[in-house]
Length: 294
Image (tube, rainbow, N blue to C red; front, side, top):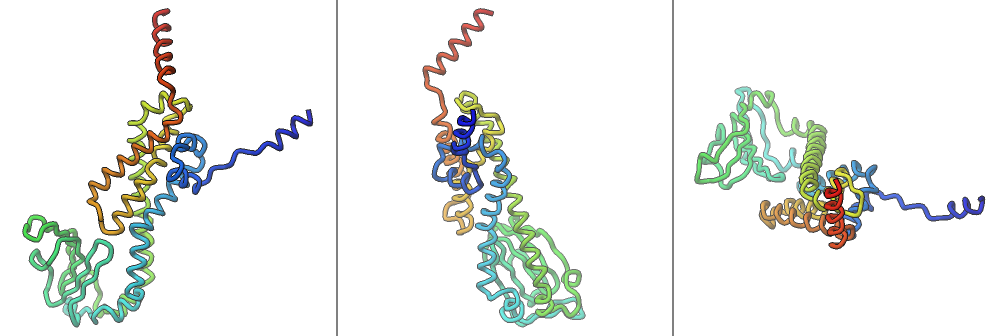
């Protein structure tokens, strides 16, 4: 008896699957994804968090950090790069010259030679934070030749946004707040990514139920859902790298490619576990016999 117990103790224990194991399987060994989805239930939430943070770094964290580094940090930006400006007693913002810079997909313009920006003041389409002498606006412009594509997301008088005497040093004193805002934005983007791809995984799980129902593996819908989330890994990376480099491929076309890749990976993951045609025919034959006996 002791000999049997000792032999069992010497047997290698199954290797625990970690987040990085799931990541590597999702990219290089996709035929193992179906089994991994069953074995990795306790790691699924950790994997969702990992992918969400990873993608948020790709599309927001790294580009934002590189942009801040490019102008030497916020302090240099506010005190050296930006022109001198100050909020006057009359509620008007005054600056030495026009200033413009891009952060992510937003263009920030400050031009106090005009009271507030209107449709004809822009040279290209895009999303703007436009700061005039009297008003600050966030503006979405889709077509330079169509004023109906011009929309003001918000429009506030500067005397509400800035106190009297507000200037470059006032901005520099707010640097900790800007870092907090960046961190909050990063967390919100990561949350959005998690929700987006979880919903996509649910859709893929419903679509692929015909495969998992006849699989040799005893897969529940939850197992199928986890497999479909893992199967999106390659397309998630490709689609979001495309976003981070400025859309080398159109966003709709990139999304279609991502969906096709995910569907292919789901079929590859289920392939090793699909029954032979003879097994399927025998199952239908047995079902017919059982219904006839009844």
